[in-house]
Image (tube, helix red, strand yellow):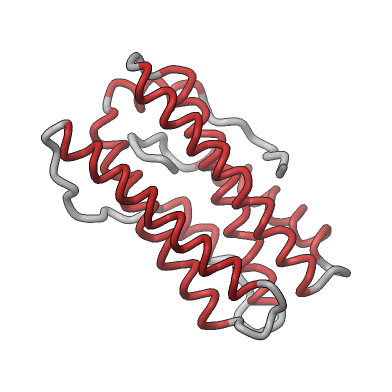
Length: 189
């Protein structure tokens, strides 16, 4: 499991619970983007052993999560709405190197960090939402996110074992700085 270097500010969970409908909408968009990203990695890096099968399975799982979150939205009478974007993910992706193999390693490691942050936030939801059904749902999803983060790190190690530890450490520092600097939003990230 990835050890994040900055924990989420406690004000996030207060805002997330108070504005859970907005978090739920954002969560649906996150699952949509995660499925699309897995397919994009499969398209871009089919030569990395194990990546095509892993990304096909991940895309299927993320699409299933999207379906579950959309069902929750519908059950609550909420429309999905437009994707307002994710300043956190955009800021992380801005630090991805532009040429391969560095680009592939960075994309995998940034994906791992996003999954690790998602795991933390979904776990916080599972511990703080008032509805038992939602707590159980988010507990299950948090476990899945932890597995996804580990998968991305393993794939990065397969791609460039000699540089993953140092690059992951750099990106963890950057991610911690972003968490301290970005405003707290009623969103997963």
